[in-house]
Image 1 (tube, one colour):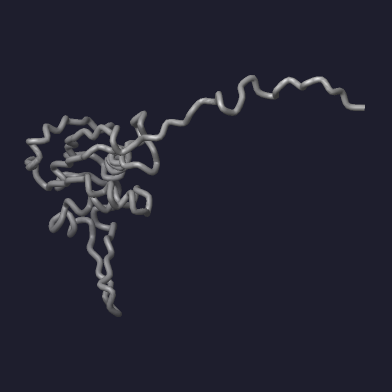
Image 2 (cartoon, rainbow, N blue to C red):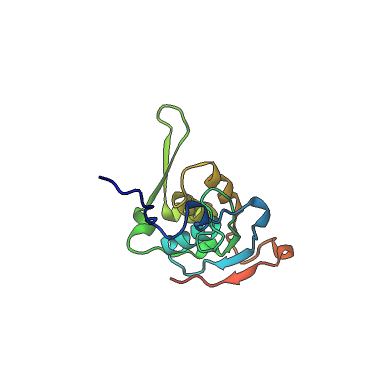
Length: 162
């Protein structure tokens, strides 16, 4: 026979007293401008840290569905380093959309023509494939030389650990 005495709750708090999950709102985001010098930095290690900055993965306000990341300005993209034989063996492919329209370039050819595109493609490959990531990648500004036009935003220099 069952007793009619009240049972003790399994959890000391009721469901309504539980801790609330923080969700960032577009109004309370703080975006900083950061400058990264790519001179002598390894491509993949630099790209992972830039992708984390764009997505705000290391901020306490991180929310996966809200863009709370910082603006990142990369200078000296032409002086990026790669390891191994990637300088001659790594290939970048693109397709025109027409039959037989596959084109490829080596890393050295890309470095000579469009050094900014090397870093942009590396960072883009480390971002998720969705609308938010396409919006976040627009906050990445890459320049081949040491000068950039974003002096008015007062970007803070950031030392990348490699």
